[in-house]
Image (cartoon, rainbow, N blue to C red; front, side, top):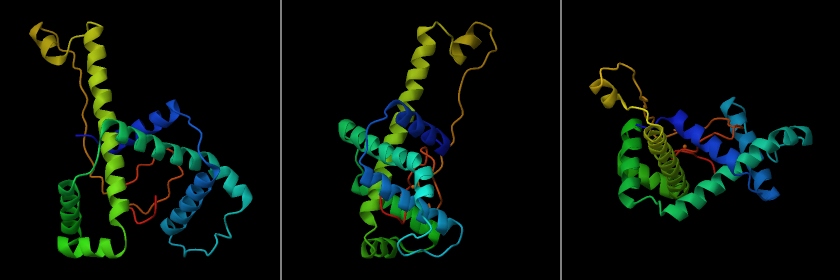
Length: 201
C-alpha cells in the first residue's frame, strides 16, 4: 500500500523537477488559503480581509504558495495526460467510508456535501490523490527495473543462491481522507490535499 509520506515525497520531487511559472494571482490566493488554514488550526477566528497577513508575512509565504499552485497544476496536467479520473463508483465508495467514520448515513452525507457545494472539491482532491498514487507506483516499478538492469538480485533470486541479503520496501497506506478531513496548515510544498478538504482549491 502507498502511504501519505510516499505521496508527499512524490509531490515534492515533482515540484522540484518542474519549476513551471505560475500566475501571481493564483499564488496570492494560495497564500491567503494557507494563512486561513493556519488560523483555523490554531483555533483562531477567521479575519475579514486577513489584516494580519501583512506584506512581510506574504513575502515569507510566497515560495510555498507558488509551489502549492505549481503542484496542483502539474497534477492536473498528469491526470489529463494519463486519463486519470474519479468514477461515480469511487466517489460513492469514498462517501460511504467517510460516512461510516462519522457514524452518519451515506445518503445524508452526500446531501450535505451537495448542499455545501463540496462534491467538486472532494472529487478534485480524490483525483489529485489518484495521480500521486500513480506516480509513486511508477517510481517503484522504475526502482525495481533499475535493480535488475544493474544485475542486482531480487530477494527470491538471492535466496535461491543461498544469499541472505534482503531488498524490499514496506509501504503502508493512509486513506486519502487527508485526510486531502484536513484543516491544517501547510506552507509546505509537499502537502497533499485530501478529499475531505473543506476549503476551495
